[in-house]
Image (tube, rainbow, N blue to C red; front, top):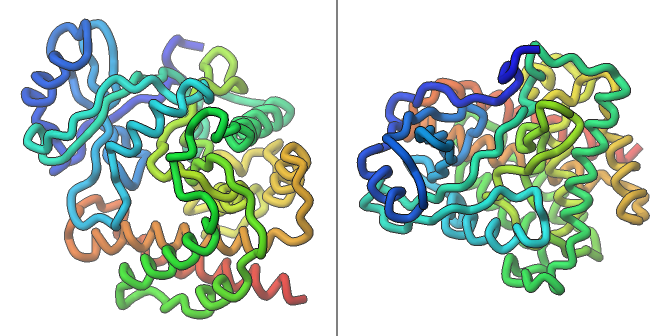
Length: 357
């Protein structure tokens, strides 16, 4: 196997999303020690939210994260919060990348941004790299190791680690349901459903009790970095934009909204962003069973968390599509996102009807 053939690489910067590299470099030379030369700049295509760039200097590569252009949902794309959260979490959760610096001076590139270490490895996106072939047993091990990273995060004693400032905590479920209902309605365009049936069901079926822990809220395979020499070993977890203090089962519901398994329908397979379809991966039901066993959680019915995860994802997708619909972004990947919103709301209704049988 040729060295480097498995490693995740950035691509050419998308038109309209270029950095003023002279100004960025001038700021970095003051705030990050030891950078040599002028960086070559590439951009990662995986994210549909914040823009992520790789800056390759002569002696090292670093990652720059910034908010996208256009209208932003209130509380979203807060680079300062994302930077501070990871910096605070790093001492108690080693899978967080090292933070290198935060720039709040918007005159540098038109918005604030932060830079962090680059974790060099494999990112398991829609498909594993062609040069990487895992048998079902190894795939099963990889699957459980990724889930164990989430479980480890949820087991962090945030009070003992002095991380209670990361979120409001109690009342999380109610805030999430109210918040995502509002955000979906605000971002609605003419070509997507009203979502009233699903929103009403969520508001009327909120669990009485909740647990509070550190939640990632975007925990997916394509947000982890794997060791190229041992693809079952996790080097790090990325994209902490949405992390907070929340309910662990809500976080699991978010993860499973992206979980396209081997026997899912055609449209689900078309929207798949991670290799959870591979033989050896756990099914969604098996993920819930494994997670609850490891966390010592006893739950009779996961439907509320499943529907919440799917509806929240519909809200995220619709917010992104809203920007495209109103010509605030030119990324052609967003053109058909409205179809995905229809599909996710259909999945919500299907899960609700299945529960009533």
